[in-house]
Length: 124
Image (cartoon, rainbow, N blue to C red):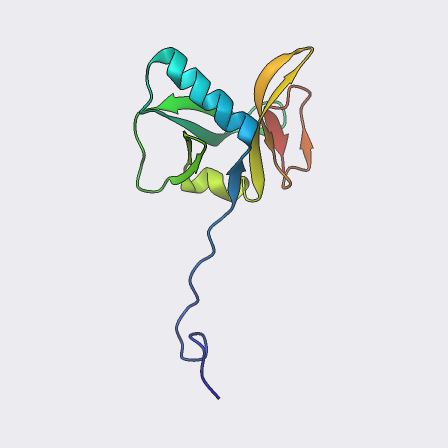
């Protein structure tokens, strides 16, 4: 019987933590960057402590991609997430919502046990 890598004492390759970007979010990111005249920038999504529920999502445009960033590309838009935030965003999707009360980026996070009314703060 053939041996697998784990039978030989080798560790299996680490699975990439999934974070996806919806088509609506990618389209809006590309539009915003085109309006600003900065096509080389990326949208950085991160999680910080704070907000009314414990953690909060932060969205910023950035010129730099760090060594520990995961880069997600979709339809001409690039989104980066740092390694620490990625652990809290595993399985999440960045979306762009347009409704009667306004338009905004939203994170659909299956790990969040609760969130505040504005949707930018959550707890686990």
